[in-house]
Amino acid sequence: MKYFFLSVVLVVPSVCATWGDRARYDNFTEYFPNLIQETVYELERREWSNLRIDDIPVNISERIYDQNFEGTVNFNNGFLVSIQNIDLIDATQTFFTASTSRITTGSMTGNLRFSDVVVGFDVIAHLEDQGTQRFTATFLYHTINYNIRVAKNLHTDEITVTIDQNNLSGTGNFLIFMPDNDIADVLTRYYTMWSVDTSVTRWGTTIIRPIIEELIPKLGFPNVCFNC
Image (cartoon, rainbow, N blue to C red; front, top):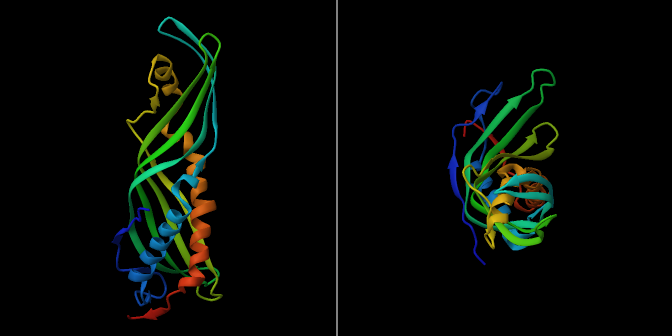
């Protein structure tokens, strides 16, 4: 099994409100990258192919190459096929005191970036004139980014994890079909890089976030220090 080792880009110093520049997590530069690295290891242990994609049904109705294409196409059994690189970028810590509640929160944030991500599908087209056509297809995403935030309420010690998919980049790429023929050329029009947006967002909220939440009690949590 190939294990990914993160390259990390840290942003320092932390930004603090009310507490000035005094508050820090005492081992943030080690703890947060290690937390995300262990998350990636767990994703690998569970296998990337378990990151599934919802079926994508599409209706077709157009005339191309003097042929009518009427019917449906279904992109089924989608999953993540491969990733070439994983980085943690813009990792930083912030402390903020709300003006109304006076509650102070210490947050660790960073962008988990997957690069050169390939997703794959079984494709079945039911067309009135051409009959049933079956293909396999893959699509290359340049990057998929997740913004991760681990926040601690410094008054109650409650820890919350939030994760948002904030970049899905596949500009200029098209589905690659096997076999490749005139019908495949038509079907390519019915998949865009945004077709998997809901599924990729769900990877973050239902798979990556719970892993982080499970790891925090095992790894512990850094202490807050002042002028350190």
